[in-house]
Length: 302
Image 1 (tube, rainbow, N blue to C red):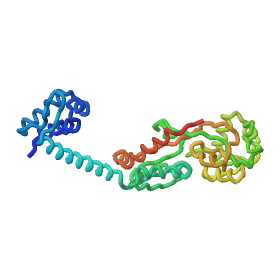
Image 2 (image 1 turned 120 degrees about the vertical axis):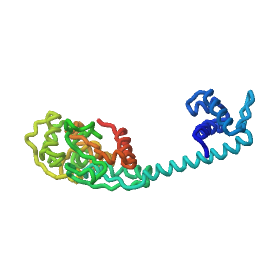
Image 3 (image 1 turned 180 degrees about the horizontal axis):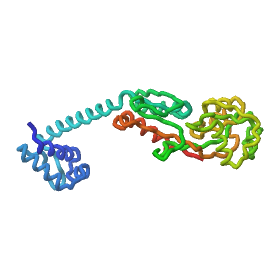
Image 4 (image 1 turned 60 degrees about the horizontal axis):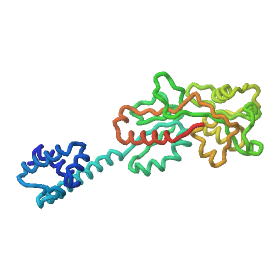
């Protein structure tokens, strides 16, 4: 039976056998060369034979050292392989995400291919809901909500900016309007419930106030209970909608939507990422959470 002292010595022996240098082995192990030399000498004493031939210029393995180095290398290889398999097994299985539909459709879904290339064995179960309040912890692992921050909230997962958008056919020469007040000459398309507790005009009234626009009179208004429906109506040429900057990149890049007036204004609401206590102890959930956070760091705002 191998005792603890020999197990400890084998770690130092393995490093020296790979590097054939006490100094380089010490750098790998983050200890002093003297400590490495002492551990190897103690191991040789316990085993009863020499492991290295030491000369002034060179360090060589003895025949016994070569055989032991091969066995230790195979052993460490098997250990690393087993650890990798154990880690991969923790990244296999289900992650349950509850998310608001607009964020899911316009931000998350286009990026999922990248996630599955990185974590092919994680099964993502997505539940898109307009209302995320009052969820039981047992029913999900993570949730992404769009709401006005409360004093109890952590920092937002992602802030949001609002900018007027429409079909290019709605504008003369497809160019943005010169004055914000000119927006009122077009039908305004509303998300009538942009966040919990918001009034049906609140999103547009917030933008107009911040832009210094008197909201009277407005030519005509259309109301939808979801932001993506208001944007589809804008694509169809029915008026001007407020696009959420994080969600409309594809529509702007493709030309399906254009900026009606070039002023992005910070939304009263932000996106919040919530992980359940059980999720915080789950490697799969943490992997998905970190992947989301890494994407958010790449987003730039106006």
